[in-house]
Image 1 (cartoon, helix red, strand yellow):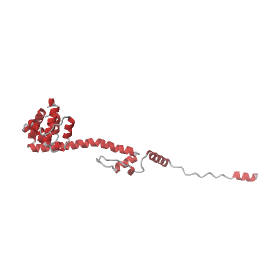
Image 2: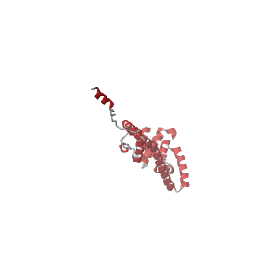
Image 3: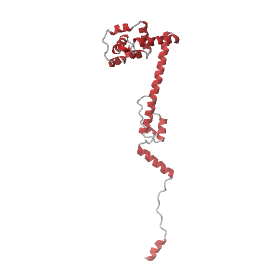
Image 4: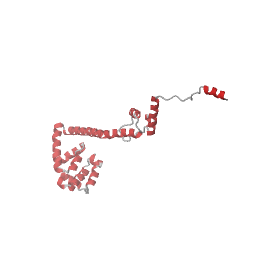
Length: 212
């Protein structure tokens, strides 16, 4: 018995077999992937569901790839797009406004027969409008080609009295809210309907007689 025990003790004990240890790079990648997954980062860039309901632009695959590589969550990726839209909307609106204004001015220059004539006419229109119309009515007329042409017709016909006569064909709004509602009517800002122009102008005149 003792001999066999001694024999067994003399024999080398085999070491347990263990799995090969992961390299530092593999372990780091595994940890990062696990962490990003826990944070909600999608498995691939096409996992982002970007809302571009504003219609200014669509989700960009290249940008999404960069956001995914940087570990952006869906909410963070959406925030990037939202901030881009927030900054772009005013710029686009301003560019569109300036383009439209330039186009309208070009039409007015052509209508009045050249830059010099238009420059003098615009000066006269502004002076006449400030003297005869309430500021809100003047602002409404001077924001479009059709409005300026209508203002010129008023000036050349000396029309404040004519406008009052036209306005007498129907009730004049009694408060500014009603007047602004009428100014949003396409017949006012697009068609420059004379009767509607008259009512709005006379309405402002009655509301603010000291500003006329």
